[in-house]
Amino acid sequence: MNKIKYFLKIGKKAHLEEFVNGILYCSDAETFWGIEDKLKIKGQGDILEAGSRIFAQKMMMQAHDSGDITTINMKSNVLVHIEPAKHIPVFCLFSVYEEDCELVETGQYFIKLSQEKQKTIKEHFPKADSIAIIKDPEQFLENVVNSIGCAVKHEEVHYFHIDKGFEIEGSEQTAMDTQYMQYLMKDVPPIIENGAKRYVFLADYAFRALFCKDVFFKDEQEYRIVLPDKRISGSERFPVEISEKIEIVPLEKYVN
Image (tube, rainbow, N blue to C red; front, top):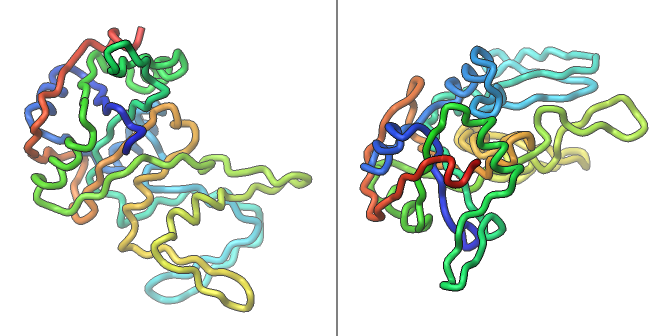
C-alpha cells in the first residue's frame, strides 16, 4: 500500500455524492459482461470478468456430477466463466501511484496523470463527469473492513495475458499465461503426479478471478474490494462508515 498515494472513484457526480456519504455501490460480474456484450463498451465492461479464455491443442473436460469425460482433439479457444464468482459483489477504485504525481515544495503529492492514462479514463468511463479523491487509502480500507459487516478481500488487480494468450514461437499454437494460472491456484499446493504438476482451483477461492484482468485494462490501475461471502443480482448498495472527508472534483481537473 505504501506506493499507492490516493484512490480515485470515477463516475457521475450524483453517484459519487452517495459514495462519500458512506454507500458502496457494488456490481457483479454478470453486469460487466452485459456492458461489453450488449452496450459494446469495452473498458467499463468486460466479457472476461470472473472468466477466462482457455487455449489448448487437446482438451479433456470431466463432468462434476457424473464424472463423464469429453475429449476435444483439436486446437481450441474456449470462453469460460467461473460460476461461483459470477454474483460476488465488487467495488472498483483507481490507484494513484507516486509515478502519477508531482512532488511539490510543501512535500505533498499533486496528481498529474500521464496523457495515456487520461485517454484510458476518457474512453473507459465515457459517462463520468467527476472524481472522488480518497487521500488516505489505508484508512479508507480499514473503515470498510471494520464497518461493512461481512468478510472483505481487497487488493490491486493483477493484469495478465488472458484474452489472447501467448503465441508459441515457431508454431501456430497459443499458450495460456502461466503466471495467471499460478495466481488463480495459489491457495492449493500443486499435486505431483508422474513427475508432472497438477494445479487445482477450488470454488472456495473463486474470488481470486475477480482480481485478474487482461492487460488491455492495465492503465485503469484498478484496486478492488470484493465481498466473497455475499451474492447479489446485478448491483447492491452496502453502507459503510468512512472517517475521512472525501472531496469530489470535476473530472476535467485531472483529465483534459
